Picture 1 (cartoon, rainbow, N blue to C red):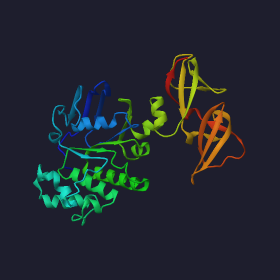
Picture 2: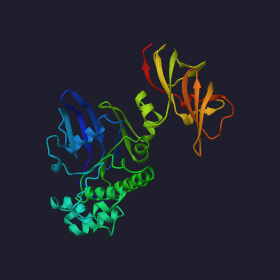
Picture 3: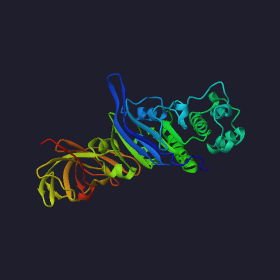
Picture 4: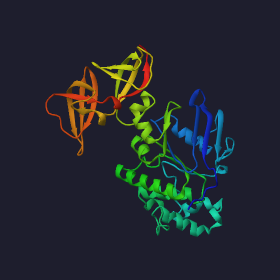
Length: 351
């Protein structure tokens, strides 16, 4: 059911956006491949929605270029960019029926292949599992149903690019999980280039081909969900993308480099200057109760039972550490084990 024109990828090249004295985006360069599901993730106010609005044409860059399908659209109005947008608040027209909402964009653009508009609307309602509900009004729909109709409306004209701005944030957790699977399945079926904005790290990891982690108007890291999670490039990424234990460590030797962590010395594959002060991280699921290349004697502060795992909150020499384990710890002290392969260097620090 591929309907896009060829080379419908998206590019931001050195884009900056300012609002008075405030810089919302600073020299952002991103490339989204044709047919890719690309997610911008970061905390509130980091610039991810501004990035999306700049792609849509709602914000004008103070510097840089925006391209869609290889074409410079920096100065084009939103209606001239061949995009579909789904907003956080649905933005459905309350005085229109479901069918009329989905058909709205077809007033200004013919359906792909000059299909019959009524048939196109029916096909979009079926695509989002809302067939037979065309005569209902938005006020009679649940939040999840409204979001499906907003998605159908955005897709009806057959845009080259789909932009979604936190489309699931107003829904409860279980419905969010179901709808994110539906959105991903629809994106794959249509093979449409998609840029998705969320502050939910789990959501970003679950549905994306690649992720850009945004912080204070800068892109901290771009990569697959697996790469961003297991190999964070910066301390911010390590701490924002899921839970992490962050340590200060010292590089003791040059060939091979040796890292001192606690009272243990580890051999590193990565070359770093001798005596450099580094920041390393270890995911809680990689911390065991027992032996490892590194062992740390810690006090147990609190234990949470989550059904399939225990979250063990510990104190090690005044530093809070978290372990996720299958077994429940016994006693007030534990030995935490960490393997060298699970230690990731995420930056350097001033000595």
